[in-house]
Structures are given as structure tokens and as C-alpha cells.
Image (cartoon, rainbow, N blue to C red; front, side, top):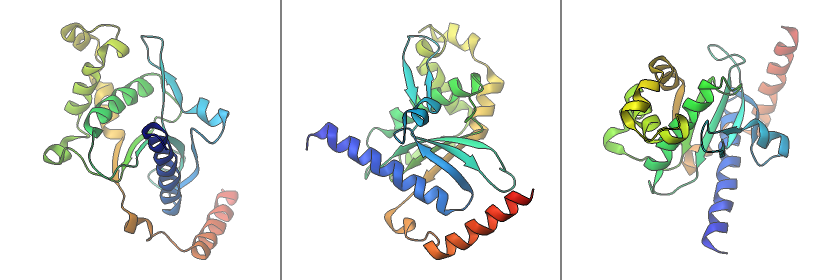
Length: 202
């Protein structure tokens, strides 16, 4: 298997495992991956405002229970064993989140970055800050604003939207052992049946 094919297989596996973990929390339902079908792929695909290119998130779906009842989310999944180049990819992800929020994309209530390997350990606590979002958007200003001039791009930046995107960010770190702590299938089935019954009575 070539390197590119191996990365693709790991990507598919990571998205599937992240989906299972999210649904196992019982706070996520109807989750789907961009590879599940053409329809799912379309729902998770957006266009950069400039440059004529598209991008897609790995997962999307709905949330249940206060304070997130009926909120929608999209997620980027990194099935990595090491930090690798996640910092660079994370900055691009933040720019994508800004574009999605600006377009009022239907899955943009929450943006999740799901990984098996923490990165930028020395600045971890600030990765979901408005400053980090602003820096990332300005790094990708040619695709977001159509200009590579930082000062010009800064004038076009929506500061309130930057703060809003930062507030919607989730950084989730999984591990192989953590995945084994999901509810057992028979327990999950009982809870799912009760949730379905309650939701049907609302």
C-alpha cells in the first residue's frame, strides 16, 4: 500500500471511530461522514469565497440534550499517532470554520477538531481563542477575502464573527483505551429506545 492510500484508509477509520465515539456519548445522533454518500458529501462541502476551490468537513450531525438540543455540528478528524503537521492543518480548519459561519452553513452551530494526538502543547489553552481564529483567517486571507495583503484583510475581518467562531470550537482528544469506555451495546440500546420515546412525545 502506498503512503497516500495508507493515509486515506487511516482517515476513513478515524472518521468511523470518531462517529462511533460521539454517538456513544448519547449526545450526538444522526452523525454522518462525507464519504457515506454523495448527499452527505454535499452537505459537508463548502466553497472558499475566492479561488474557485471547495473544502469539506469529515463529519456532521445533530446534538441532543440541553444546552445543545437540536444544534448541528461539523467536525474534522485527525487519526494521527503524533502531532505531525496538525498545527498547520488546524489553522486552515479555523479559516474553514470562519467561512462556514459567515455563510450561515446549517452545520455551523459547533466546530469540532477530533484527534488522537495533541499538538502545540505549549499553546494548547489558547487554540480556541479569538486571537488564534483571527491569526488563522488572516493566514488564509487570499481564499477568504481575496487579498494577501494582511492590513487590507484585517479591515475586512468581522471581529464579532471571529469571537463567535471561537465560542463554537471544540478540541477533543481521543485514545484507544478511552474508546473502550463507551456504553455497552445493550445499555446503549436501552437508552436510545428511551430517548426515541421521549423525543416522539415532544
